[in-house]
Structures are given as C-alpha cells and as structure tokens.
Amino acid sequence: MAKQPSKTSQMDTIVALCKRRGFIFPSSEIYGGINGFFDYGPLGVELRKNIKDAWWRDMVHRRDDVVGLDASIIMNPETWKSSGHIEGFTDPMVDCKESKLRYRADHLYYAPVVVDGETIGYVSALQSETLDEDTQAQAEKLKRKLAIQGTLEPLKLKPYTAADPSEYEKIPSPETGKPGSLTPPRNFNLMFKTYVGALETATSTAYLRPETAQGIFANFKNVVDTSRVRVPFGIAQIGKAFRNEITPRNYIFRSREFEQMEIEYFIPPDEDLWPKYHREWIDARLNWFESIGIPRDMLIEQVHPKEDLAHYAKACTDITFKYPFGVEELEGIAARGNYDLMQHQEGSGKSMEYFDEGRGERYIPHVIEPSLGVDRTFLALICAAYAEDEIDGEKRALLRFHPRMAPIKAAVLPLVKNKPELMEIAQKLYKRLQRHWNVFFDVSGAIGRRYRRMDEIGTPYCITIDFDTLEDGTVTLRDRDTTKQERLSEEDLLAFLTQHIDV
RNA sequence: GCGGGCGUAGUAUAGUGGUAAUACGUGAGCUUCCCAAGCUUGAAUCGAGGGUUCAAUUCCCUCCGCCCGCACCA
Image (cartoon, rainbow, N blue to C red; front, side):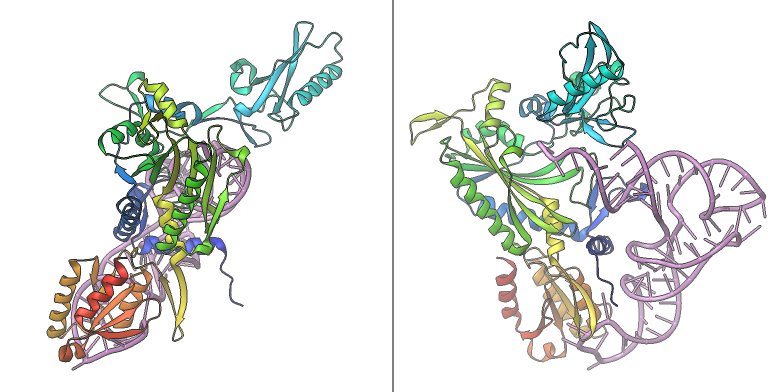
C-alpha cells in the first residue's frame, strides 16, 4: 500500500526542494546556522523580488491614492515608547518547575495571607472572573489547615511581576498549589536591542524596528506636507523588521528577521466610514493574492473576535492561508482608529492634525492597516505551487508558479549542443529575451531532463531550438503545466511571452 | 525556557570501536537527443568541541542546530 504523504512530510519535501534548488538556505549554515534566520539563494531572491515588485506595482503605482516610503530600520527610541512596543512588547513569563507549565507573569496574581498582622502563607491564581473568590477560598482553607485562630485580613492581590524577590519561593504554583516551584518572572522583550554610537550606555540604546508601520506614522506629516496627497490616501512601505521570537517555528513562517509590506491608509474619522474602507481593503487584498497565483480556496477570511482586539482597535480581519502545517495568518487588515497618530502626537509634542479642505475641518485621520509578510507570501506561493504528477508514467515534481512570480520566466534550450548553427541561434534568442526577463540557457543533458529541471523550479516556458528552426525560423514553446508544445515564429513568441508574463 | 525525538555528500537514506556507502542530483566528455535514455569520468559526507580508547562517525559529556509538544504569537 502506498504511503499517504503526511502534512509534515509535504513540508519536508518543500524544505528539501528549497534547499536543493537554491531558494532558501539556513542562515550562516557553515557555522551551524542560527535559529530563526534564513538566507535566500539565487532563485529565492528572484521570487522575493517578484513578490515585492508585484505588490509595489499593484498597491502603489497602479493606484492613485497610495505613495511609497522607505524609513530607516533604527529610529529614535522614543518612537517605541509612543507606539507601546517598549511596554507592550514585553512578555514577563514565569515557569512552574514542577508542573512544567508556563504562565504570563502579569496574569498570575498572588497575595499574602495575613491573620492578625502575621503572614501565614500565600495564595495564587490565574487571572479570571472568579479570581477574588478563588483566592479567598484558598486563604480560608490555608488558615483552617494550619489551625490558626484569629481574623483573616482582606487579601491584597498583586500580579506576580510585582512580587518581591524574597516572595518567589513562598508563592504557590496555581497548578500544584504548592510553593517553591515557580521561577522568578523573566522578561521576553521581543525587540532586538542595539547601541548607536561608540559607547554602550543606557542613553545610546536603540532598537531594530519590530514593524515598519511606525516609520510610516512618524513620517505622516512629512508626506502630507510634500506629496499633495489628500485623505483618503495611503503610505506604503516594504522593509525588514525584527522580532526576537521566543520560538521561531514552521520554517520561514515565523522567523526573527523578516520583511513586511505594509500600508497605512488614512481616512476621515467618522465612525460610520471605516467599515466601508476596511471591507474594500480586504477585497483588494484577496484579489491581489489570486492575481499572483494563490487559489481563492486556499485563503480564508478570519475576523478577530471583539474580545481579542487590542483596546484601541476597531476591527481586524486576517487573511489566512492553508499551509501544510495548518491554517495560519498571511496578512492582517486592521482598523486601528487614530491610536497611532495620537500616540505620536502626544509622545513627540508635534501636531498630527490634518486639515481637510473639502470639509473645512481639522482632524487626526483614522487608519486601515493591511500588513503582509514577504516571507509568508513566499511560503504560501511555494506551498500553493508545489505539485507532483505523472507524464507518460514518469513522476515529476513541479512548481506551478504564476508566470509573473516565477524566478525564471523562460529557458532557451538548443536541442543538441554539438551543432554550432543551433547554438548560435539559441544564444541570439537568449540574449534578446534577456533584455526583458530573467531567462536561462541550458545545453547540458537530454532535452527531457532539461524540461524537468525547469519544471522543478517553476519556469513556465521552455523554448527549444531544433533543426526545423534552421529551415523556417520557428521554435518550440513548451508549457510547464500541460507539457504541450507549439511552434511559433520569434515575433509570435515574444508577443506570447509579453502577454503572459507582464500582466 | 521545559519535556521528547533527531543530526552521515546538495537531497533522501544505509552502515560500523579499525577512517564510510547507495540512489537521485551535480561537474567534464561522447551520442541530430522533444519529456529525468545510455556510456565514460570527476568532485563531494559522519554538526562542533572535549573525554574514554592503541584507535571514536560509532561510547560518554558539553555546546550548536533541526523536528514535535507546552507556552508565546504583542
């Protein structure tokens, strides 16, 4: 019985293919690699570039209402105070050494149990609606158990993060109820720190940006003052961002260095207005994914439930993709109100107000934020494109990339290499195509082998120069997905390629 | 960070206390060769460090990395 390929094995196959054909390498592999970082090889860099170019062209050049920006990765650290990343990006964690469970330290509450002014022990519980009752019951139980007489004083609950280091040993684990197994709270700030200038001092501390968005907000006034934009309008940016993830997982899906493609789309503040723009952007983004070759049925629109939203957010809809390891976020489209601009206005002391001439009024615009990862798109494209089929009883693996996304658009293949006439024509055609696209020239091996090589890296078209070419100038155009061939003149070939690649 | 599993050419795997192999891929060559043909020939591997041993890829320890689960996903 044939082995059913499991979900992980399909992922393994894709990982192996990416390595074998030069899409993705583990970063600094000769030194044993480094967790959560990846390098993109000759084919990978082409695919990434095609993703970014397509996004930029479709979101910036082909729209009248979006302009671009390229902000620096390291910004004034005040930026991250205003944005909330220095406070909110830190997750204090506490581990229970006995039960092996881990908690958010700020969600774990504790209180000393005090009877007639004397502390007889501690109680603890996780944040919940019944927190007060739970801890009260624990305290009474403790008092009975120790057979202590007297009056129980009201519990003063504090988060574990506020505990004195001398108390860590005495606070019971919420799982086991016994003290002594909890670690001190440990901070995981997800921003990478660095130092600007020669001296490593507290005042020279800076951060690698954890998102590109803040560079856009920080430049809001600059763009408004210089670019003749009018609300509603967007600012788009593509760039690297860095998050010191506790556990990078799923290949390039969650890595510590990644690239974002973000738009902040500024709209008037009317409460009834944002749902319309939010919807428009969700649809625009879904259409875009389809246009680059991700089938609609692999995409899911997921609305964040109200209770999961950040306090300032009005709504957030994820576009998720069916990765082999599960359905995971590709892009988030958030309606963030005017929170970010307000924060920066307050933090910087500079007005973020926009004067709307049409309305004759001043306001701080609200924002819709479509935020997408280049690397997640990369992985989605490969997962969507990967296929295995059978040609005349021979198995083959191929990547069915949209021609616009394919790292190599076409290969020029002289049927045989020991005929100078064929080589000469092939070289000439190759040079001609090279002026327009990334094309490949291959003479080594049998023609069938060369086709299969191109299939595996997703090259949509192979152009073969054969003996008929010497007679009538036509070439064979072979299609990757169907393996069908047709003969075309050189001019028809160019028209065909232009039509299919430059969409 | 914890627990479990793992680490042998580019990839997938075999194997051993006496210095390593198979397939595919890959380089060169031959063949008017349209779907991984054939032949000749070449390169390339035991994650790193330490220990035990006459001898370690094999046993032990440490580190690094990968995978799964917990947690995290702001």
